[in-house]
Image 1: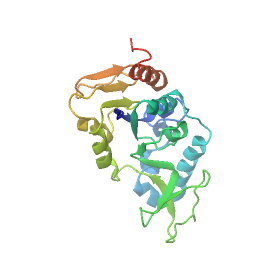
Image 2 (image 1 turned 135 degrees about the vertical axis):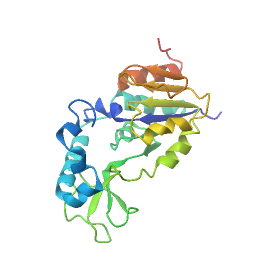
Image 3 (image 1 turned 180 degrees about the vertical axis):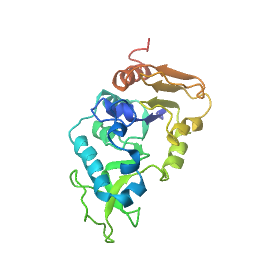
Image 4 (image 1 turned 30 degrees about the horizontal axis):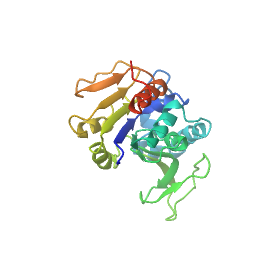
Length: 234
């Protein structure tokens, strides 16, 4: 029998419990850095060394953290369902936990790409990308990250995938960041939608959503238990 498809949209709240700093929360990265100095193409043109250092430090931290219970619960769900993850996160914690279908909307921290040919994407060996590291066409390599002001090329594919969901799950994202926040509008009418987040969120624009007001690790575990018939959510 064909497995039901669960499409999961994940945001920074999933990775935060592994120790990865989020950008918008109190104590987050935007309090330490000006977005215009590290996460735009203009910043790259202005000061490549600063941008490289910012992402080198993020990458170095990624090698020091591990997937948490939310990542492992989603991977475990593949035993019973066809699970497809769409993530706004640039880390590889979903993959390291065992998830086999992960779509990265905003790029991947452990990859780099050419500045003259964006189709030339490479796995970075180690955490450090340096000035002078070049692609095969002789151009400086940059982080394989979608910076603010750049198009999110994966959105059409993510919208198509969202429309195939039998169950749609949103974990650890405020639904305030577009275009990713708009993906829920591609979910077919009548599809069960679950939202896992500890914060008070305004979800009036999502019809029939079921809210699990918990952090990603405990909320995801509860949802997985319910979907697999082990335990119902109170």
